[in-house]
Image 1 (cartoon, one colour):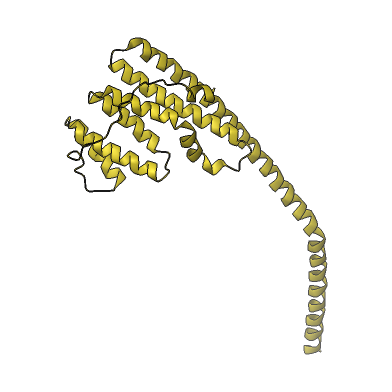
Image 2 (cartoon, one colour; image 1 turned 180 degrees about the vertical axis):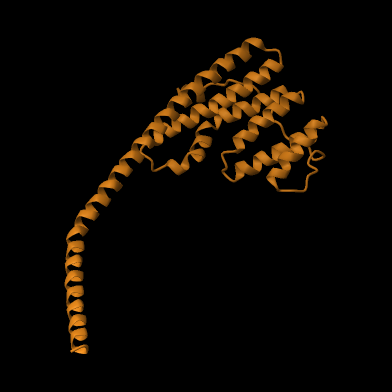
Length: 227
């Protein structure tokens, strides 16, 4: 399914968004501030500045190999459509499809040694595709392309369900591993206790004779004192 997805051009567009020099008025590298500024500019319909802030934040995350740049790319696509730049919005969506392998690899890199890596990969692929197609559904609906909107909506649902199946499997596997670890821990404790029993018994005997001897010595001392 992945190869079929990567070979398809869902959102045909050759127009990529690039902010103009006059739009790049921010003097901050703070990603959260850039996102807040984008929202503020959007609320007052200053689309050029809103888009430039979001574009810069997205590029910064991408340069750091941070998979969350995909979230900003989806948000940028929505902003572009609202700003009347449908072709640029489609370009952003297709770029995410084209970069699917890369985004998934950095999203699940901490699972690289996991036995279920392939399942994590399938989970992340389907989750991202469901988000891409759901964003496309919204954009095409706003552009009055009903048939395409419904098609992307169906694709979003299909990939979301596939992602949920993978998630359920991974949850069950984690539960099984935790149960196995708990059984191992209990067995280890039981073995440790059994191995300590002879030592404990020997210690009890030693204390018994120690207190017996001390008691006898005290008894002799008292007897001698009052004799």
